[in-house]
Length: 254
Image (cartoon, rainbow, N blue to C red; front, side, top):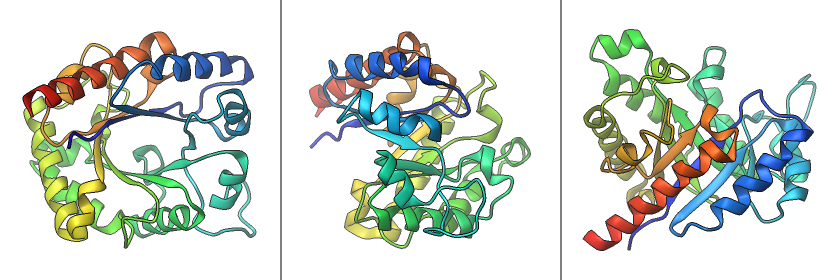
């Protein structure tokens, strides 16, 4: 059975109420494509409003605290995100990992799961590790320490995002992405056994409409975590279209 591709937009610190029309356009456009699951991880200020604007379209958060509540100024617990309308959250994005340990990322993932949120766990290597030939060692070490104890009860996704590629316009070669995705697939299968088959592996790092088809053709890449190109429907929907075409090609080959 061919698994749907998963394309997730991460708006980072972008977007105000006026940009909800882009959310509407993305949700409407994405519905035209078969074989692709699409979601947007928005600023916390937009989650509730977006969930109202596009009911049924998956809206998520970009981070979550590992504690359910307490004296954590400026933080949001998983139950709070669910209450706002979120159905998923990112944890461990490289732009936050500078201030976090992998154990904290894992605790966040498990807290999100317990509240009913799907989770995307991000891992990636620095430019120094990449140039030293330590990419797979670094990424697998981070994944082992950051992944939650169990796959479920919600959907778990692992995203490879080389730190040096994010927002740079540069991406690893398809062969390099394939090596890492294959190593992560092996890790997930060994760690979770048969349940690991349900864990999708994404690539994130300067994904756009021009390189998406090439990335989706890489073995073991089940989708993409998209940054800047997810802010506008005109940029994001071509990536969704490329994912749908990849699923169609895989179905024809199978």
